Image (cartoon, rainbow, N blue to C red; front, side):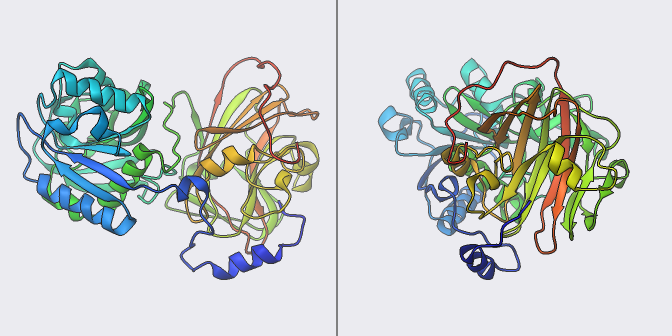
Amino acid sequence: MRRLAITALAAALVTGLSAAGAAVTPTPAEAAPLTKVLVFSKTAGFRHSAIPHGITAIQQLGAANGFTVTATEDAGAFSTANLAQYQAVVFLNTTGDVLDSGQQNAFEAYLAAGGGFVGVHAAADTEYDWPWYGGLVGAYFASHPATQQATIRVEDRANPSTAHLPSTWTRTDEWYNYRTNPRSDMKVLASLDESSYSGGSMGGDHPIIWCHEYGGGRAWYTGLGHTEQSYTDGNFTQMLLGGIRIAAGVAAADCRPESGYTPLFDGTQASLAQWRQAGPGGFTLADGTLSSYGGMGLLWYPVRTFANYSLKVDWMMPGDDNGGVFIGFPDPQGDPWRPVDSGHEIQIDATDGDPTRTTGSVYSFQAPNLAAREAALHPPGSWNTYEIGVHGQRVEIWLNGVKINDYVSGRAIADGHIGLQNDGAGLDIHYRNVRIKTDGPSEPPATDLAQGAGR
């Protein structure tokens, strides 16, 4: 919600945005330089013909995005001193036992110091006798059918590696079955529709891209990348770049495992039909994405109220836009101002000068921790994820997996509705993948979280 006039600075930013939604000044997380990546492609088993194509593709990504790439098959590169210069190490279709015990120790130390790992395809067919590595990659290869076309379901459309993808992605590759399902320990970003091809053996839940934090560092893996053609596929290479940036720690991503959530809006017209619009304006639906227009109004979920819960919402503002996620309000009875007066808005706003009215704030009540918010925020034109925890009167906010606000409300928000705001003409916000997990009794009062101005 915006009750103040747009500042001259905001107007200048709007003027400078392109039709494609160019970003304003990057946040610290986005501005942190990715400078150096190691690509390791040693094989002690099957050797993929795609390896040189993969090296070339990553080198081209580096040239286009300002980082250098060292490609090697020399396991001697895995020394503590040498690894320290790289922000991420890519295991590109490695196979078999490729590191000795000393090199393994050096790699473990590298992750413990905050390093990053990217596994591509046969990285899961590597180091079966090294349990630490099995935990790092997430799941070991079991088998695969013939290379064929299949449909990928993109589960996380806010993650920097998958946000550019459609909700379903059809492509040809060699589709790995894994010895275990990694879902309980990883954030699954995409999975295979086993009904779309033959030979899937994971019982219908078939993760194929995932990420997690591990051993002090970060890990991202994709089962794609067997074919030579993969490395000239723009969707694939953009996905790979996002994975490298996540592993390197220069792009914030929520890689915590996610389970137990019920979709309230899953991108379909059927789920949208359960919601109601209060006030002017509304939302259009395309490719699983709600796009606001006009207002001020509120799209709200009338099916039931919620008490103690974790609510997750993916959102994106194309430019200097404005909206928010509303929690804890009674039936608005057609009036979008009733939620304003009785609930809380978790604000989305690029440039408001009042920190209690900017992204991550409990609107007009408490500012976020501004440093934490800036480090986690993806800029306009990029997708973000809110997690909003409500337990009794306590409201906690995570942005892309980073906790940025912790507030105890004086309002009766513990059993209320939720909604998505359309703030006004030209203040357009996109929303995806609204899901909720109810999780029992109230938690203790808020802990002391250092706040920005306006606490």
